[in-house]
Amino acid sequence: MQTLDQLTHEAVALANAENKHHIPTQDAPLSDSVLEVSRQMMICNGCRYCEGFCAVFPAMTRRLEFGSSDVHYLANLCHNCGACLHACQYAPPHEFKINVPRAMAEVRKETYTAYAWPKHFGILYKNNGLWIALALSIGLTLFLQMTANFLNGANAVTLDLSNFYSIYPHNTLVSLFLPIFAFVVFSLFMGVRHFLSDIREATSKDNAPVVAIAEAAENALSLKYLGGGHGDGCNNEDDAFTLFRKYFHHLTFYGFMLCFAATSTATIYHYFFGWEAPYALSSLPKILGLSGGTLLAIGCIGLFYLNLKRHPLHGDPTQKQMDIGFIFLLFMTSMTGLLLAFSHALTAMPLLLSLHLGVVMALFITLPYGKFAHGVFRLAALMRFQTERRLPSNIGLSGD
Ligand code: HEM
Ligand code: HEM
Ligand code: SF4
Ligand code: SF4
Image (cartoon, rainbow, N blue to C red; front, side):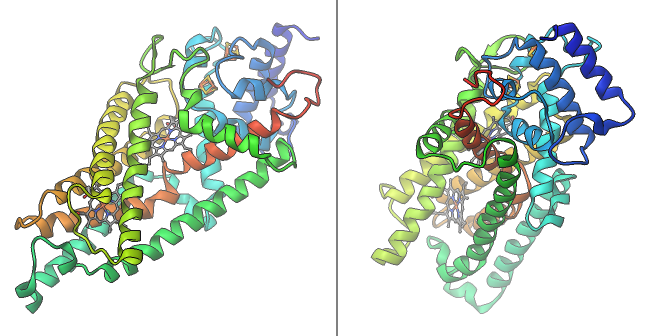
C-alpha cells in the first residue's frame, strides 16, 4: 500500500509528464480537463478525507485508474456543492491545486458538448450567453411581429382582450410549439443515450434495476448531494454550510414542474373535455400555473443571488453566463406568464402575450443546448451510481 505522499507525488508527476497518455484510460485521447480530474482523483484516492460528502468519493474509491469514461461519469455525479473544496488541505494556494468542483465542472461542460444531438450543435455550449441572447431576440421578434401584423389587419376589429386565443388560436400555438417541444425531448434523449453508453463502459454493462432507478430518482428529487454529507447543506460563499441553495433549487424545480403540469392539464381539458381557455381562477390549470409561476420566480431570485455571492473558486467561471442566462430565462417565463394571467381585458394583453410566448420559445430552443442538460445528465449518472453501488467492488474496496 502506497503512502499518501507517494501517491500525491506520483499523480503530480503524471500530470506534468510530457506524454499525457501515460494516464490510464478507456478511451484516448484525453482532454486536458479529463487529465486534470484524473490527476486530482488520484490524489483524493490517497487522501479520502471527503469520503462521506457525496456520491463522487464512494464512486472514486471503486477505482484505481481514471480513464475518460470514469471521469465523465464522476463529473456528472458531482453536484458542485463546494464542500470538498472548503475541506481540502491541498486546495489552492497549495502546490497540488486541488479544486475538485472546478475540475469536474469543466469536464461536465465537455460532456454536454460532446454528446449534444445533433453533434455540431454542441458548439452552442461554448458561448452560451450569446446563444441565449440570440434565442431571446428571435423569440421576441417573431411574436411581437406576428402580434403587430394581427393588430394592423382587419382582425383587430374582432380582438377580444379577455381571450388570448383571439390573437393566437389554439391550433396556431400547437403548430408553433409542438414541433419544438418534440425536438427538445428527442435531442435530450439522444444526448443522454450517448452519454449513458459511454459511462456504462466505466460502471457496468448491467441495466439499472428498478430499485436503483427509484433511489436515483429520490436522490435527484431531494437533491441529496446538495445537502452535504451530514445534511447541514453545502458551501456557497465561504466555509459556512447553507441549505439555501438546495431550498431555492427546490422552489425552481418544483415551480417549473407545476407550470408544466398546468400546461398539460389545460391540454387535457381542451382535447378530452372540450373545455376551452381562459379558465376560472379556481380551475386546476390556473391553480397549478399561478402557484408554479410564483415558486419558480422566487426560486430564480434566490439562485441568482446565491450565484452572485458564490466563492470565486467554485465551479467553472466560463459557465457563469450559461447558469445566469438559464436563471434569467426561467424568471422571465414565470414573470411574463404571471403578468399575462392578470392582464385579461387590459389593452396590455397582446403585448404581454407576445412577450410570454417569445420568452417561452427562447427557453424551449435553448433547453437542449444549455444549463438544462445538467438535470438529465446528473440523473443518468446517479442511475449508474446506484447500479454500480450494488455490485461487488472489483478492487476489493467497499463502494458504499
Ligand atoms: C407551450 C408553451 C406555452 C404557451 C403556449 C403558454 C401560454 C400561456 C398563456 C396563454 C397563459 C395565460 C393563461 C391565462 O391567463 O389563463 C400562460 C400563463 C402562464 N404561463 Fe405559459 N405558456 C407556455 C409555457 C409556459 C412555461 C414553460 C412556463 C414556465 C416554466 C409558463 C408559465 C406560465 C405562468 C406562470 C402563467 C401564469 C399562470 C397561469 O395563468 O396559469 N408557461 N401561458
Ligand atoms: C434531475 C434533476 C435535477 C438535478 C439533479 C439538479 C441538480 C442541480 C445541481 C446540483 C445544481 C448546482 C450545481 C450546478 O450549478 O450545476 C443545479 C443548478 C441549477 N438547476 Fe438544477 N437539477 C435538476 C433539474 C433542474 C430543473 C428541471 C431546473 C429548472 C427547470 C433546474 C434549475 C437549475 C438552475 C437554474 C441552476 C443554476 C443555479 C446556479 O447556477 O446557481 N434544475 N441543479
Ligand atoms: S478534496 Fe482534498 S481533502 Fe478531499 S479527498 Fe481530495 S485531497 Fe482529500
Ligand atoms: S463539490 Fe461537492 S458534490 Fe462535487 S465532489 Fe466535491 S463534495 Fe462532491
